[in-house]
Image (cartoon, rainbow, N blue to C red; front, side, top):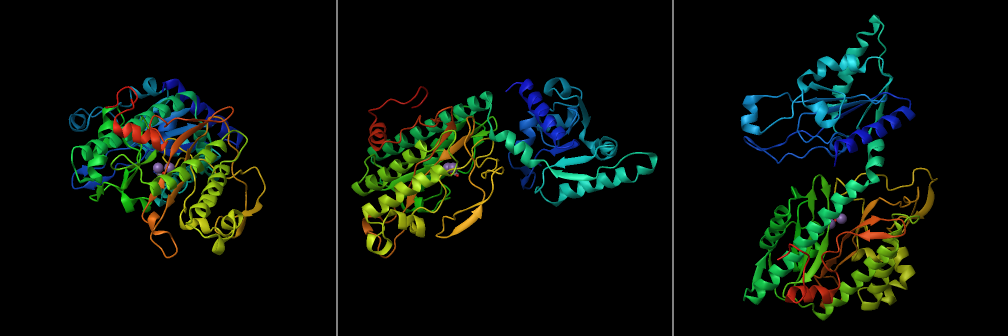
Length: 470
Ligand code: GLY
Ligand code: MN
Ligand code: MN
């Protein structure tokens, strides 16, 4: 991403501020977080801050006035600290490197803020980031107010900056989509690698493979191809663990005859991917596993078909639920006698016993990315609440080209009375990342197959992977 992209984003945000009456936006990056004595968690910038600045260092703030003038507060050069922590951009180099109009040392934030906020009608900053930010802004406002007698006007309005930046981030530009395609391709390659690894281990005579060993294959592939980290803790779930939606890869052993569910995606240059595949440990689906797998795959196809401009984000969920609910009746997970037909199963939300999450979310810098899910420009209407009742709320958001969503239906069968035992402990989710295009959607994570025959072929070693895969 070039400096000009960040300059253009700041110019766009300044226009939005202007249209809302003007003022100045304040945006801190994320704090460093201590992990334990003398050791920090790996640093990760704040997504809004990086989206507007392109700046990766901690202890930084962006100030953007609605007339377009931008100021970066950052750490000054410090030759001794830089021996320990690495190079800093520094105040002198920041304007040319980042395209900001001015740069000041972050230590000067409190003393300069009063003059920077003077005569600004409104202050915009992200709400909901904790009391400390509100307290800090309140302190700066108090300083300006104390100087009012000298003819300075004090801001009288505080506004939430988050919705403006979130709306911008919801619509990805070409360079963002290029990064997301690459992130999804790396993740797909990691899933391929994990599948082949399992198959090889069982062929070599292993009786079990630990979840953490499979996770190691994913991490290897993420880093080998330049991703900075996983976008979220990798889920590697052996057998029954797949019925725990956020099961972290642990010490459970995957055994022949079981399914393995992997929900793992890398983060590349600040952008997430989010991919789920299920595969049989030994490379062959059992009849029951295949039955449920094909049902989830059909639900995902219905969701894909319902993802195009003009349709609503939630339409994919409704489409997937209908296929899953019909399938639950067809395979006997739900009995017709107790639950009626597919419409009754949807209306009563009986399907939630086996499918209890939504079918997708926005994807971008954050794995659950920002952006309204509701159409804020439409009036609330009565609609099903998905729990068997109704609720009055705004309709779901209409999809537009450049939005990115995940499509991730699943089925999770916990042992229970009345549930056919042959399906117990099977958990399946299939998740792909989809860019909304002019007339449909582009699946950017299909570098790893979803068809059961194709998965088996890949695990047998009789199918080729993309360049760079083992
Ligand atoms: N991996 C998190 C999710 O699928 O939403
Ligand atoms: Mn996921
Ligand atoms: Mn997801």
